[in-house]
Image 1 (cartoon, rainbow, N blue to C red):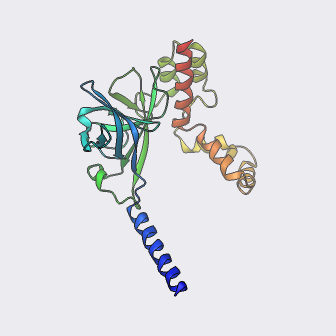
Image 2 (image 1 turned 90 degrees about the vertical axis):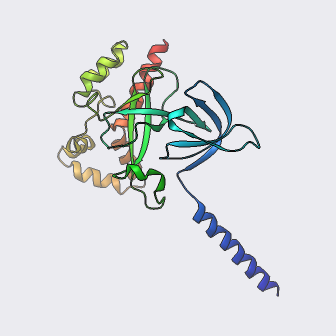
Length: 253
């Protein structure tokens, strides 16, 4: 009898675990935070947001009824340490039918320049709220805010910055001469090159024996992580993060 009871308990646990997995949604975020409306009103409470949606649910107080706020009425909201802003995109490579979208702030709130991350469903922007979470076609791209507290942000791969990245961006940060010179001189970590052949050369494939060295590195325990680090350090996101942090620190001094 005891063995039967243990078996029944095991089945009950297994069933509840499977139900929890069925209900799990990696795009669903919930936690304490604030809600700032475009009208200027600000509330503290609990926010619930599903990444890709153009609305957010919010409890203003404990026991209060959850309310839905559309993006047209929202300035920003937070969930834990993550802050999302309603932004108007400019120069995006990926088509997007909505006029605005919520974007995750990736850099400090303080400073003129800011980096934002946006996630959308590729080729199906109108179905963003109805994706099947275990088989999404998600595109992540990045945008720059060039003036404080404006709704407009610009794609890091858009015409505002590409081509002639070094010339355009060094001009943008001209009031920080040391940083502007690093960008103008195309120093490593301060230049963006979207040409995949040049990116491979940056890994040493352009020199004799480069491929062999790369293969040796890749089979070591630390190899994959080190290669990812090399690939990422000159990606648009990492370059812009570095530039923005340096620029905003320069502005404080």
